Image (tube, rainbow, N blue to C red):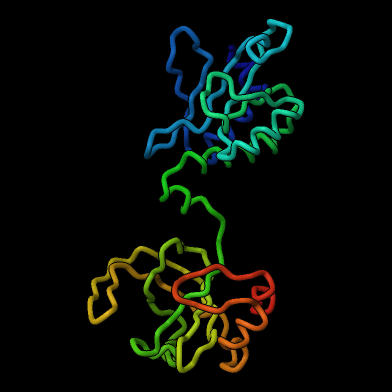
Length: 254
């Protein structure tokens, strides 16, 4: 493929999207197929996309005309089954697993749609750390035990403190701190500004290996989001660890 064709083609646009967003440059692994370009994760070296030029008959078409395609992993065989019923999609060529699909790079599938599937493929093939890094910001309810920490007065001397980091929480997330009995209510909305801060504490039933930094954004009246209200209004009957937030509660907290 000439540089000019690469520059002006959908293939070229998709390649630039991958390079810019994920910092992954194309690898040309086979002398026999110099236009095959593999894109990998930098950590686990797994492929998340491969761009090729193949003949139409390899996709079950009647012609042998060369076409540019990209293979991506959906992470969901059912989604793959749905996509291949649409124009421009085929079962993943030369990929054994059913959750890979082949997409024509001829305009039949909109570029924005191809980019979304590349993003999905990147996540489907990423490490646990990679998935956490790439996921969008999330809202959490985080419990606090007044036996170990005076959460009621936590922000009396400033709007930023360190807090035990729950599994799955990352910078950019929002945490709503729930104080356990005898308070039994959500008291604060905080932004997570830093994570994975080393910490070494072990005492009684509490062990902390890493903490996060959180910044106060909003206070709530102690009588509003009580344990009783969380159960009767929002279907939350326990807060034993970091957990997601139902949409109705999210709206009311905002």
